[in-house]
Image (cartoon, rainbow, N blue to C red; front, side, top):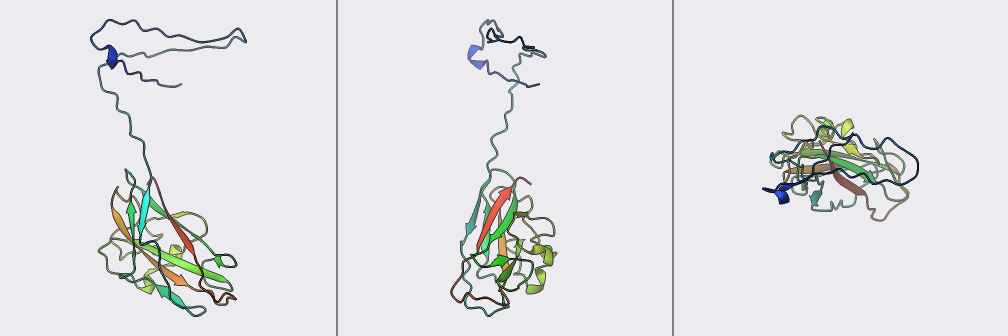
Length: 198
Ligand SMILES: [Ca+2]
């Protein structure tokens, strides 16, 4: 069953005849229409505006200097990333990581395998310490949405869940480099920040 709303405001004040016209051909006989519950009203019909999802990230890079095998590097307040929910409604922030060729992203560091842990928090929260990044805050190569515990910790006053339109969150990373790697030049890891309805 499908409800159809037709705007008759162009005929306001006039006497009009309404008709339902069924277009058909000479082929098989089908059931046709069942028209029911017809209502002519002056009440405005509310149509939901289209829900657009969008996010912006600034700055777009985190430049990690030389790091030894199995080393850790994490963001400070000076190089945190600002994520803005640019949707026209509330949104939940999502993340996934894409490893460069020859490396994989995992829950811990290993041979040619790195890990990334992430936290969303309020822009005004104090910067997190290494221990604030939990095992559940690990990025994967599939989309993970923020929850009350994933990508946040108890000391953060706000997380990435149901972020109101135009509001911002601070995004912090903890990077764990591979314990062994044959790559000696700079490598680029892509993290994709997305949004979904809360
Ligand atoms: Ca957590």
